[in-house]
Length: 78
Image 1: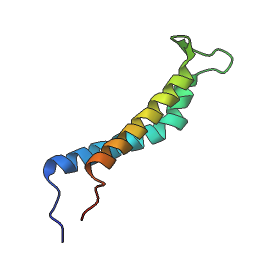
Image 2 (image 1 turned 120 degrees about the vertical axis):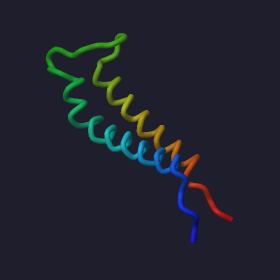
Image 3 (image 1 turned 45 degrees about the horizontal axis):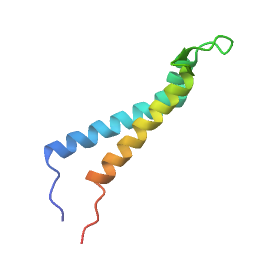
Image 4 (image 1 turned 60 degrees about the horizontal axis):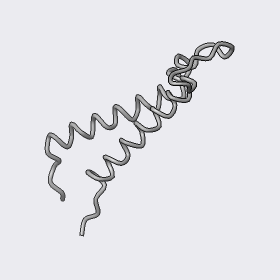
């Protein structure tokens, strides 16, 4: 039987899950609708449509959560 996780690792796990789920929900759903706005009047930030920036940002957040989890929690045991 393995030892229980230290409190810092549980907290990090909970934060990663929360950030991942928020990005998963807000990225393609409600957040994309709010960032995209009216299709006839697209918003631009730094010359790039705001919708694209929003979706790429959410994707990077989810990818970052996966990389952090892979480096900290998903380790092989010998």
